[in-house]
Image (tube, rainbow, N blue to C red; front, side):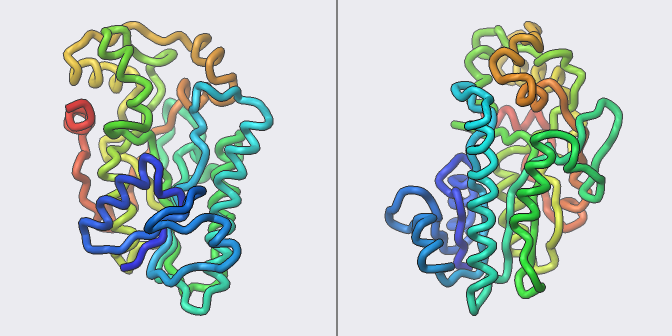
Length: 294
């Protein structure tokens, strides 16, 4: 297939591109910078959708960038980087005379309300209680196409674990020094997925004609708490991991609203992902972390 990937030069996009090419697909990236095998967002807006069999959008400003203050300007960037790129691709798909067979969007499990007791699958309600859940609702709405000539899939991703980026990038140094530990109380759930599985679920969604609607992009062993994650990462590195990061520090660095993403979590299960026939490479946390830090 010819696959168009919006925001494909980032952490997830690089892994997805590699997997798609290995499986014999042709990939064109949509990015801010021109280059070989790429088109820019401006070109997409000007000339419409290039001929393709499938499109994916991964574009979005990194919410947990500790170097950016959580103020109105950054919130606007977080929103617009997701909504505008998604809208642009959806409009281009709707206008093209030969629409692609599949259109896949990656959003997040922030759609589901943090809870220490609730368990969420793809049909659970959510999307209406804070900045991030409302963002996911708007983001998924921006992707919706009229009619059914194109299969539409949304993958709600957990925290992505992989080498050279994602959440682990920021955590490795303190953990390697034996200074890691749980964040806040440590009791909150920590829905995670290995980067290879997120790329795998996206590829499965593109290739399998029966897949549509929402899939949770989390590992099936998703009943991990933050404290268990810290312990497993410490064990994988052969370091102790019991120095907690107090919630007051997290709030000071990220701001109250953003800190919720780290201090609270959801128990999310990939019921539809499993029943669609996807087979995980890293269903268990221990093996996933060993691969990441190898």
